[in-house]
Image 1 (cartoon, rainbow, N blue to C red):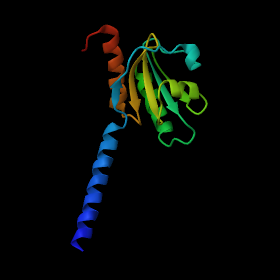
Image 2 (cartoon, helix red, strand yellow):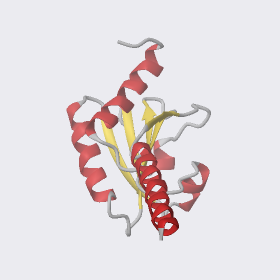
Image 3 (spheres, rainbow, N blue to C red):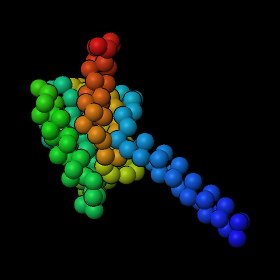
Image 4 (cartoon, one colour):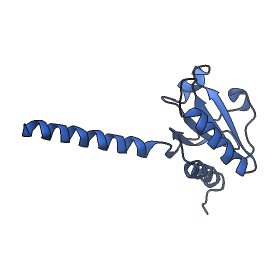
Amino acid sequence: MLERVIIVVAVLAVASIAYWWWQRRQGRVRAASADVELSAEDLGAPRGAHATFVQFSTPMCSKCPGTARLLKSVAAEQVGVTHLEIDASERLDLARQHQIMRTPTTLVLDGTGAIAARMDGAPTPDQAREALVAVANRATGWSI
């Protein structure tokens, strides 16, 4: 009986740690290499002058509509920032090229189309703003 209780407690502990780890990764802003630039033709829409949120979504994604609303509102706060939503199931070429393994995934482009940051999962408003700061730091080479 004691062995079963210990096994149940151990399984619950492992599951809790895995959940905590998964939640910490949601929307986290990661720096990305600027080796690839995405043009307006690649995206199928014009980019923002300062930055562009390129959100990859799918029709079955439950968090994608909320993420789109959030990114649009953050983009509206800044001049020269736009939000583009791309259906990853229709644009498999872009999804494969940028290793989109889950949705929502957001690439943050600078004004030239270079990828400055990446957010896997649904970001918070603060994380979206942090990604815009990463674009500004990359463009100027210094931070505020």
